[in-house]
Length: 153
Image (tube, rainbow, N blue to C red; front, side, top):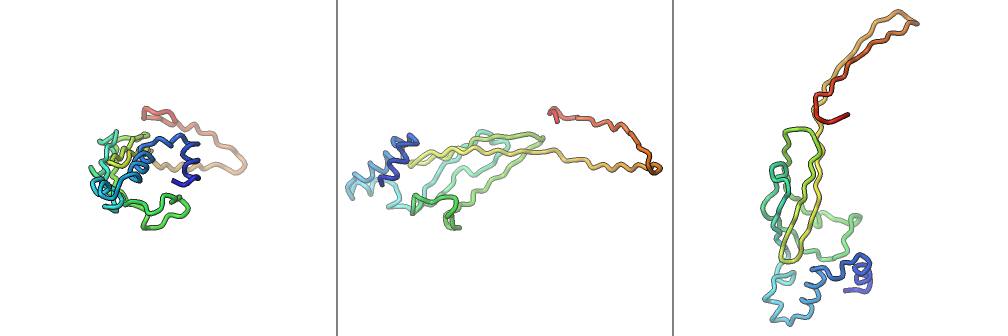
């Protein structure tokens, strides 16, 4: 681990995370011991099991395979197509509202937790009002708006 990475992990209190412990442990293994441990030396991908907190709304596959990063310093600014993984996600809702779901990806290597949020709005009704009035006269018309949903707007 580079000094910069060690300082960053120390500041974010992730120095004792499982990925650091696994990396340090793997570095201390002999060549014959490292063959017994599944890792980036043997495989270029990691398989994650998928768990979602709202399976009735968020449909994902039971497992996702992600490639092992060649460089741990990939940022949002320097992503390439080869570093982006498309994950099939299907969302289904019967009513309007805000749906928050916790997505947990778990592998032998690490656990990743993502928060997915979907905001569903009801179909809008369109209305058109037409007024006819003589020039320079004002027209006042009360228009009732009825909220039939359970949410205030």
